[in-house]
Every structure is written in structure tokens, then in C-alpha cells.
Amino acid sequence: MGPGRREKIQISQDEIDEIKRQLLESIYAEIGRSLVKKFLWAAGTVVFAAVIGLVVAGKVKLGG
Image (tube, rainbow, N blue to C red; front, side, top):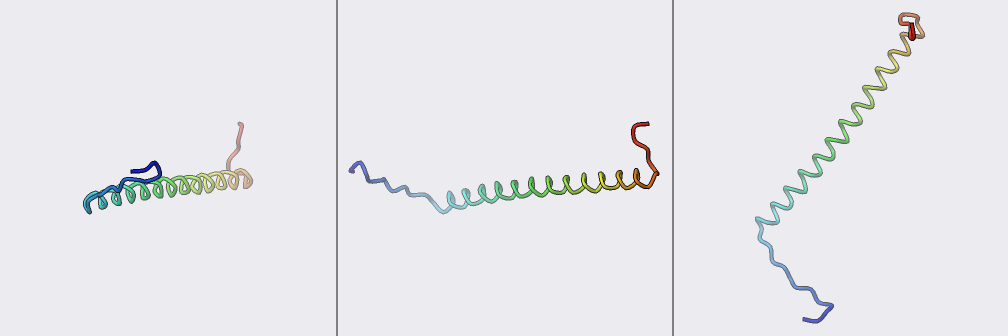
């Protein structure tokens, strides 16, 4: 074989299925992390807004 040629690699259908399974697991894990991160940001924003609302309404005093 010359320097510019590649050897053809044969893989079985089982190997292809395993690669697809691992890829999907990786994608689902990344999506899950992203959704959890967004949920936590949203929950933090809601809590922050609620505390600010209570302070403005005079129901809670910050700093003693």
C-alpha cells in the first residue's frame, strides 16, 4: 500500500450497535446535565426574586 492509502477496517453490526448505544448515552447524559443546570438557575432566580420581594414589602429585614 502507498503512503496515501488507508486500510479498510471491517466492523460487525454488534460493534456498530455498541458505538451507537455509547454515543446516545453520552448525548443523553449531556442533555440531562444541561437541563439540571438550567433548572437550578431558574430555581435560584425565583428564590432571589422572592427574597427581594419580601424585603421590599417589609416582611423581611436583611442585615439585622
